[in-house]
View 1 (tube, rainbow, N blue to C red):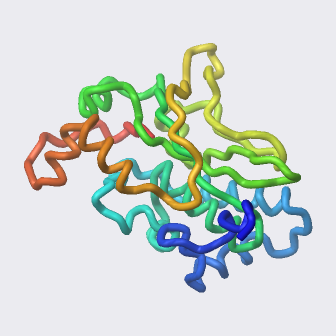
View 2: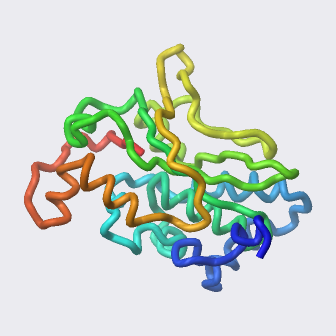
Length: 225
């Protein structure tokens, strides 16, 4: 198997071997000829049609990370939306993978920082698609409604050729996205690794996993990944 072949295969999480996932990828790209145009169509469909939902980023809930589940539910978070985008790309023959990083989103609320007990979002994820012989980074996280509500502006836009990830600064010159640690590229999702780090870095996630009650966050405008 060649180096690119591994990025074209279905996996446990990139499960485009399920017919309805594969069919949706071909439906979205119907009538388009170039890989760049197809990649753009897939990116904007996942960005805009899959509603952002931070509350489903729970590493112990394996199903939440599968492309098929995200597509069926029509909501997801940074990692699950990126898995779906990369799964769509693989379904139509574009090599794709997921890139995991630690991110500081400088525009999140203090309430979310208090909940996480840190301002670092460990294991933020974005897609990488191989287009015109280069890997292109794509972040489909925030749908338009979430971006406007949370103030995550400028939105990520993709021209079909160049990287499309969170801007370092917003439209007013304030800090926005800051990538602080690279956790590598992956052909399939290393969910166990993510769960170990979440248990270590986010004590309240461990409390939730163990069935302990914690006070809910009431600020419905908040998103953090």
